[in-house]
Image 1 (tube, helix red, strand yellow):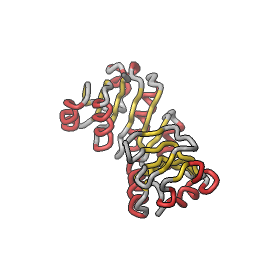
Image 2 (image 1 turned 60 degrees about the vertical axis):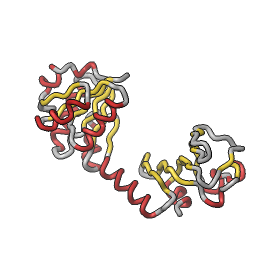
Image 3 (image 1 turned 90 degrees about the vertical axis):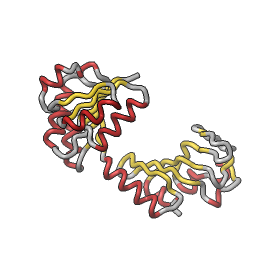
Image 4 (image 1 turned 30 degrees about the horizontal axis):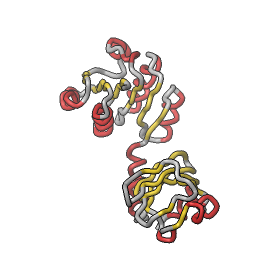
Length: 216
């Protein structure tokens, strides 16, 4: 069980905090808005109203004992940067911060954020890919040129083994996992002789230009 501190509990931050708590972890939720703190208090371990840009306030909460800090202050870039600086200086080893744009992200990385997320952009990309291609169920960008996609098996792959399909040679991608429709089992290390069926769901990784070959 890990200990998380979530700073900024709007829609995104609140969802992160609640989900981490439901997964069995200790979660300290912090927000400057008293109404938000009262609303989330029943769904996390502790909820505190305080200014996340006040180093003394955060220090008094003993946040140096937490494993991970998630900074989801979205509307105020300056507060986001200050909060990230403070939690890093106070000794939290892993800091995840939400960014509004690429410049904001660059600053967050410069001051010590270990990971920067763009929830609105990422969700927009997922929805767009799903709307354009009926076989794409999910889409995650790993880097500007590489992504992971969750897709339904192509018709031409039905009843063929991975060796016969040879996706690495034909498509330039790798299949990371297969969820077999027949028994709902997930195979996270598929072998060359595994057979693909039409309703199987595949998790694939590759260059974006190669992944486009799978869109139907």
